[in-house]
Amino acid sequence: MSEQPAEALARRARQAARELALVSADQRHRAIAAIAAALRAASADILAANAADLAAARREGLAPAMIDRLTLTPQGLEAMAHSLDEIRDQSDPVGEIISRSVRPSGLVVERVRVPIGVVFIIFESRPNVITDAAALCLKSANASILRGGKEALGSNRALYAAIRSGLATAGLSPDTVQLVDTTDYAFVEALLRQDRWIDLVIPRGGERLIRAVVEHTAIPVIKHYKGVCHVYIDEFADLDQAVEIALNAKCQRPATCNAMETLLVHRAHAGPFLKALLERFAARGVEIRGCPRVQALFPAAKPATEDDWAAEYLDLILAVRVTDNLEEAIDHIARYGSNHTDAIVTQDAERAEMFIRAVDSSSVMVNASTRFADGGLYGLGAEVGISTDKLHARGPMGAADLTTYKYVVRGSGQIRS
Image 1 (cartoon, rainbow, N blue to C red):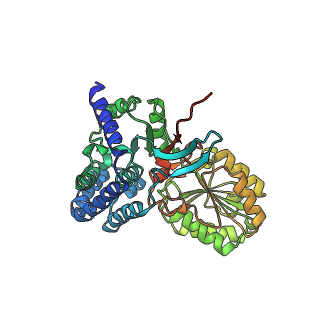
Image 2 (cartoon, rainbow, N blue to C red; image 1 turned 120 degrees about the vertical axis):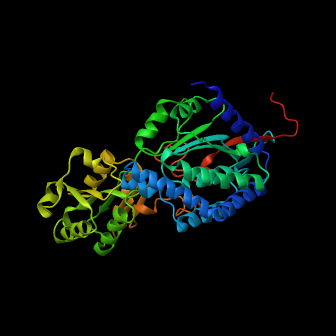
Image 3 (tube, rainbow, N blue to C red; image 1 turned 90 degrees about the horizontal axis):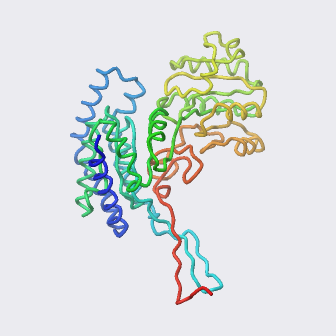
């Protein structure tokens, strides 16, 4: 297809980013507040659009996990507006002086936080992403281009109307936040070629989407491949605590990327305790896929294959393995994990510290559910995604993670000899 429409959209975003760099923090905060107010005012229209999307998704036979992600409720919509309130009220990252020094020459050298510029965010299913992403980009003074999945097109259009209303109320360009209002992936591919105008791409969705984005762009990409999250119940765990953490990590909302997919249990507990725990899982509808020791203890378990250990089920399916020691659990996570979120349940501080140092994940939990790996719960207000990369940003990404820095050097006539 022609590059012209995609290039025109990206150029408009670049111009909006230049204008936004000169806008005060107060004006950006007014825009976020106005978007939250517009969400609340248009709740009936937004929920009606979402209901139509859900009906179409059910006719198309979308998986239950996708339906769960797509669903909006009055409570969920209010939570989205509240999230914007929290983002607005946070300290402004733009212009923060990260470091400052006075050199022997008398030059004052500052490292100052600045916007990245134009951020292209591609996401699937979850309508809340559009408002979180728009607000986080506004907070960090970035122009944004947003493209949601076709299954949420009606919901995203209704939510985007609230965003446009908020921008207008605050006197900001409508190009500050742009929605890619088409299901044509060729248009997305054309945008991915606009490396002159777009500074960063954040794909938020399944591994297939992320790999497709990486293959089609020369623009830097922050990736979130999979959430193969583990909970390890250590030899020195508080077993009552371990039960509650494991059940919550798997069952509270299994379709999320921070839900536990593999349970690792020290052999000291591979008896009545583990059997009772697996029965609790089964009572909640969880299908168990286990190693030979798990199968011997719990005959209803299916044999776990090599693929199961690396699987992100996003469903009520759980892989379970008995390990001989902490080191074996750490090795398992290193081999099959996705660097997302992993937890240890233990009362031994030294073993907890060993787990923290050895497990190379963006979030490492001690005696807490993996479900806490979330930008809102980390105090970021919301997140634009959870990065499993190591460069630039890692873990839940808030407004500060959508900035870079520049050096500002102030002198009084110095010249170099």
